[in-house]
Length: 376
Ligand code: GMT
Image (cartoon, rainbow, N blue to C red):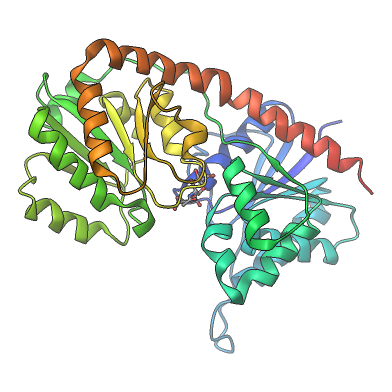
C-alpha cells in the first residue's frame, strides 16, 4: 500500500528546504504520495510529478490581528490536508513552528496520523536557548512520534539544551549523486573573468553572522598572497554589505566576485578548487556535500556537524573556529600540491558516495516511518 506523507517545511533557499524537497521527490519516486504543505512551492520542485501535491498556506490578514497568524493558518491547513488526503504521516522540518503546528493539527483531526520531526539546527542552537520558546520546543520534541537530528552533534546539543530523555535518531543529510558531470565549464570561467591558471575558492551561504563570511574573506586575503586565486561569494543576507566593504578595505575587489543568490550552484562549484565554510554554528553544512559531490575538497571549522562530513586530511581539512592561520596554511598547501588535491578530490566524491547518498539515507527515513506507523 502506498503511504501518504505530508511534508511541512520552509521551501525557500536554505538547506532544510532543499533536504525536505529532495526527500519528497525521492519518496514520490519510490511510490509514496507526497503532500507539501507550505507558503510557496518548494524551489527545487521544477517539474511535474503525478504523486506530488502542493498545498499552499494562505495567511489571513484581518485588521483585528496585529500580526498575521501564520502558525494558526498552517495548523489549520495541515489538519485539512490530513483529513482530506488521509495522510499517514506528517514530517515536520523544524520544531518551531512546523512540529508544533503538526501536533496541533493532529488534535483537530480524527485520524491516527503520526508526527515525525526533523531538527535542522537553528531551532535548537538559536531558538532553543531563547526562554520564550524553550518550553514549546521541548514539547514538540517530546510529543512527536519520532524525532531526527541531522548530525550527532545536533542530537547531543538537543539533549544538553533540553535535558530531554526523548529518543532522537540521527539521520544525516544527503545528496543525489546521479546526473553529476564533473566537467568544468570553461566558458563560465571566462565569463566570470577567471584566468585559466587561477585557483578558485568558493563560499556559499545566507550571509548570517554565524557563517563568519568576514573570516572567509580574511583567510582568502592571506591565501591570495601565495596562490594566484579568486574567491566566489555566493548568497545574500544580513552581513552582505559589511563583507562588501571589507573586501574594498582589503583591496580585494578585483579578486572577490560577489554573485548574490544563485539557484544553479552546481555550475559554480564545478569551476571551483576549494570550498570554505568557517561557521561558528552549523548543524550539518549541506553545502559541503554539494561541493564534495563534485570533487571539491572543503575546509571547515570544528563546529557542530562539520567534522561529521569533512574528514581532516582526507577530503579536506578541519580548523579550530577563528584559527585563520590554520585555514590559510591548509588552503595554500592543498592548492599548491596537485597530487594532494587530486587525492582529496577523489576522497570527497567517495565520502558522498559511501556515506551521504540519497537512496541510502532516505531508506533510513522510510524505515523510521514504518516504525512509527506500528506505534499506538
Ligand atoms: O544555515 C542556515 O542558516 C540555514 C538552515 C536551514 O534552515 O536550512 O540550515 C540548517 O539546516 C541545514 C539542513 O539540515 C544544515 O545543513 C545547516 O547546517 C543548518 N544551519 C545551521 O545549523 C546554522
